[in-house]
Length: 333
Image (cartoon, rainbow, N blue to C red; front, side, top):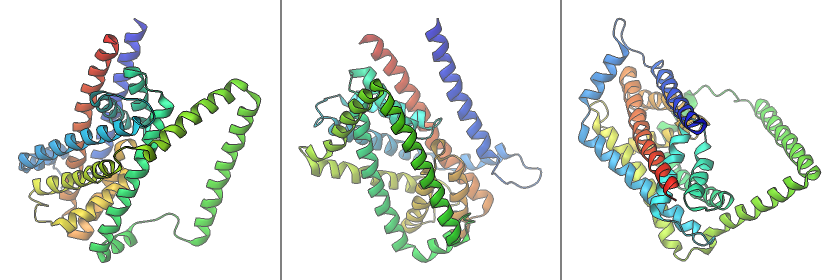
C-alpha cells in the first residue's frame, strides 16, 4: 500500500511540475488585446504542416535509439553488457526526470538501468559523464559553425541581451564568489570523509567505479563507430530543428543558415539549469527570431512555445511508456 502511494505521489509531482512549466511558458505569449492565448496557439498549431512535425518525432526517436546504443557501447569495456532495450528505456526515463529535476535524468537513468540488470550506478554514471563531454564537443563544433556562417547577425544579437555581469570588476567578483563556494564545499566534504570510515569506503568504491566508466571510452573496440554515432545524433538534432521550422508558414522560408543560428541559440538556452530548458528557451529563441529574421513577436513566441511543447510532449509520452515497461520488467526479473 505504501509503495503504491509513493508511486502515485511520484506521478502527481511529475504532472504537477509539467503543468506549472506550461503555465509559466504561456505567460510570455503576447497577443492582441481581447484575443485569447489558447486560441492563438491553437490557430498557430492548426496552420502547421503535421507531416513535418511527425517527421521530426521520428527523427527524435531515431536519435534516442542511437544514443542508447552509444551508451551501451561504453558499458561493454567496463565489463557490463546490457541490452539495447534496457539502455533505451533507462535513457527515456532519464529524459522524463530531466523535465522535472534539472540534470536529474543523468542519475535516474543509471539507477533505472541498475534496477533492470544490476549494472552498478557509479560505473554507468561514469559513462554518462563521457557522453556529456562528447556531446559538449559536438555542440561547440555546431556553435562555431553557426558563428562562422552567421557571425555578424549572432554577435549583434548577443550584444542586445541584458547581461548582468558586463564589467570586468563584476566578472571578477562573480569568479571569486564561485571559487569561495567551491572551496567551502570541498572543505566540508573533506571533513566528512576524514571523520567517517564508512563514508571513506563508499567514496573509494564510488570513485573506482566512476573512473572505470570514464576510462571505458579509451577501451572501445570500435572507436570509429562511436564517433559516427555521436555525429549522427547531432545531425539528427539539426534535422529536427529544420523539420519544425519548415512546418510553420511563418518560418518555412528560413534557410539552413537560419536553422544553424536558432539551433545554436536554442542549445545555449537548453543548457541552462532549468527543467527541459523551460523559461530560458522561451526567452532567447523568440528574441533570436525577431531580431535576426524579423519574425513578428507574437508569431515567434507561438512558434517557440509549440516547438518546445512538441519536443516535451514526445519526451513525456516516451518517458511514461518507458517507466511503465521498466516497472513490468523489474517485477518480472
